[in-house]
Image (cartoon, rainbow, N blue to C red; front, top):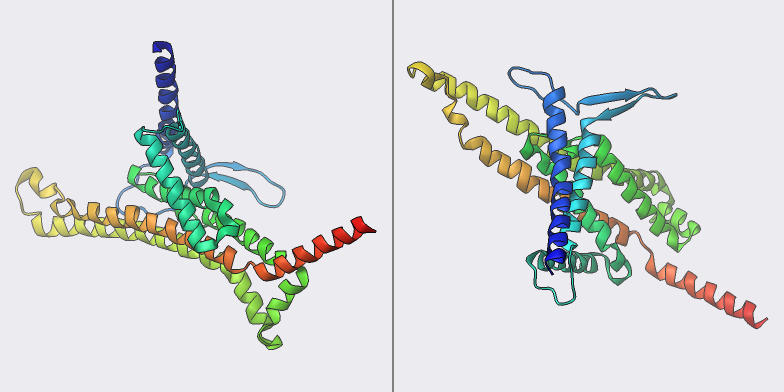
Length: 301
């Protein structure tokens, strides 16, 4: 029993390290590679490496590195929460894991219907990666959700799934939908189709980036205001930015925590609604019945 408990604890430690080490690594990487700057500094993702390519160079940035760190950390956290899972249950981590699964499955069922019940892991992944990516700013790291390339990639993946399920009703039905309600609306319908991934990407990216910019500007303004109003204090007291105490933390709690998690939820909801809303289930069922009838006739003949 002691050997088993030691082995169990050792695996737990390894999984915790798998969750923590990627985040610590990117923090160390940022400290070692970020040049010192004075005053307000609002920049994009830092470029770590440039790989020459035929058409365009491939840039390895902090957004990509941090994204992989988040993915590995989430994997380690999931493995930790499900380590030692049993039918009897009882452990807090298993209860938390079961609660997350139940809530996600319920949300997917309510938003997408029974046909898409298998999408629960995908939706949970979207929420986790998006939320944890936005929360990286609390560690002083560049949030991948502030990079349009990262969020744009997610939107393109979702758009491919939307198109895939729209085609379940047949190519003819899909093309015909662009001419509804009248043929003259075709250009606008095509534009609306293309606008779906663009709007999803820019909504998520814009909200996260704007929150980071506002927090930096307010913190800098409070520092200047503190120096202006309280700079007359003697000695080192006049150099302490008293007005920066508390207010930036409140802004960070809103923009980094609440807004980041809210944007993750909104992106997941838009994913579910667009995929299920574009799926012509009646046409799909009719095509499925016709295929089954053809197979039966071939078998009879």
